[in-house]
Image (cartoon, rainbow, N blue to C red):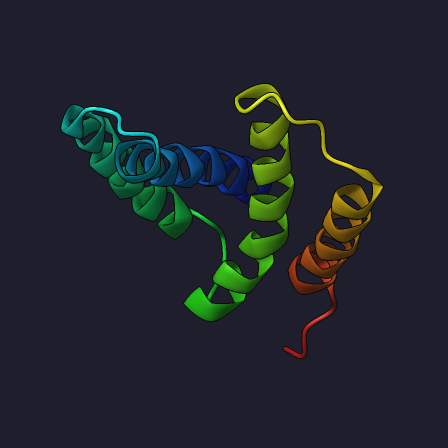
Length: 108
């Protein structure tokens, strides 16, 4: 459960950080957006190291599904565009992959 919470907060931090750059470069926002953006990206990297996994690659792979679901929530809440059925179907597939990676039995 701690890993899932770390993934969720890491996703929020990563999306917020990347969105700050998006706003600066694509929406002509002030360069000051980069300050919280960089801090959010640093927080993202820190939070991802808090995941309970012996291997970074496995943690990053499992994180992908959480990131995709969080990005669709961001799309809806922050950008005001409701995800369509294809967005949701893709997110469900990715979350299923996350569950397999996180909870699949491992050889000891």
